[in-house]
Each structure stands twice: as C-alpha cells, then as structure tokens.
Length: 319
Image (cartoon, rainbow, N blue to C red; front, side):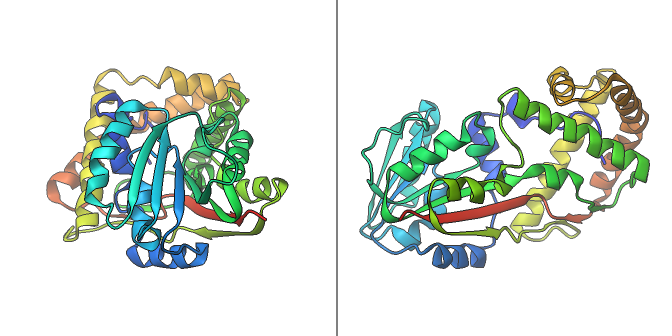
C-alpha cells in the first residue's frame, strides 16, 4: 500500500491526457455489447452526453446508436470540446456529431429533445448532483433513456488487493481506510462531490419519477503480471512506473502529505491524533516501498490483482 500522496497526473499532464488514461481499457468489449443491449440502444437515436470531455461515451457506444443518428457532447471546457471535435472524425460514421459549451445545471436544450441522455463521472464531482440529473431527465423525451456511469470509489479504497510488494499490517490497513473515509466525507461537506455517488443514483432517479431503473457493475479486474504481453497489461505497467517515479520524487522532498488532502480529512471529521498516526505510518513505509517498487520495475516482476473500483452503469426510462 502506498500511503504517500497519490500521484496527481494533472500536475504534470494536461487534463486531456488524464481523461485518456482514466478511460483506456475501462470496459471489456463484450461488456459494452451487453450494456448497449441492456440499455436499449438502437440505431438512429439522438444522444446527449453531458460533461462529455473528449467524447468517450460517444466513441464507445456509437456503433449501437449512430447509424442515421446524432451525438451532442456538452462540456464547460472549450479546449476539451475543440479536441473532442477533432477526434470525432475518427469514429463518427453514418451519422452526425456536434459539440456545445454549456452548464450541466441549465442545459441549453428544450424539454424532450433527446432519445438517450448520458453522463460519465459527472455527478461524483458536482455539489448539485440532483440538479444535474433533473436537467438530464428534463431534456429526455418520454420513453427515452437516462444513463449515468458513476463510481463508488470509497468502497474501492476499502478493498483488499494482492500486490507483489510489501503487504500492510491489518492495523495500517484499517488506519488507511479510516483516513480516506474522513477525506471522502470532507469532499462532500466542502461541496466537492460524493465519491460514493454510484450507489445513490438509483434512488435519485426514482425520486425524479424515472421507471425501469436498473444498475450493472463494471466487470473489469485490474491485473498486472509478467510478461505484460497485451496492450492493456503494458499500459497498466506504464502507469505503475509513473507512480513509482512520482512517489520517489515526493519522498525526496522530505515527504510532505498534501495540504489539500489534510484540509479535506479534517473537514470530514478527522482528528489530530489519527492524522499524526497516519503521517508517522506513511513516513515509516515510504522509502522502503519506493525501493521495492523500483526494483520490481527494473526486474519486470511487478504483479498485482484486484478490482480497480466499483463502477456502475445506472439506467432509467422517462415515463
């Protein structure tokens, strides 16, 4: 378990690159086929992707609705929209795509415009997730589909994974879980979003009057294991190497727990006593773990297995 500050790729990479890394190898191909059938996607649909980023949802599901259909991606970031528009030429075939700047809390479309309205990892970052979802439902036509791809990242933090470097003691593991619980609660209290919102979305849909509400979980398991001979395996090893480099750099700066993390921890009910125990544990393990991780990267013996997160596809129909 790495208890130093998790690497924030946004510090060294563009937001666009972060989005690409997070979505590469997110779903198995056959799972996408099953989800499209389960959601009821059909050719010729008019789709809206709220908080579209680079248009990942459109690219992923285009072949299931795009023939004689249309895709509208909405985001508040003009640089992302410009890049999404360029990239859409790679996957838009037989239909049309448009990209619009706008606010998810006040979608610039009339009631009942779209057959399929979707968002991915949007509600988890919002201080007003109910308002966002209500807008998505408003612009969906009667009989249309509303879908949210959202995680329960807090549960993922509590999950036990296998890894080839040092396993934490049960006391250290419980302390890590407690600290990150307070951190997640702090995010909610300060209006930065709910990292467990995936579990709440079905209830939010029910209160909005959506029908036939259902949920499916991502079946991807994170596996890193020699000889790293598939694109997915090679990519995960590269992410691990980046983590080692960032962790080592952090340790060389005399080890400093991120101030923002500390602020969220205390906002979520954390105590000074628990914080001191956590920082002492982190300092105790940091250098040892970095050396183990570096050695395993050099020797190509890194291995790990575990679910990366509880990531859900939640769908309802507008009556």
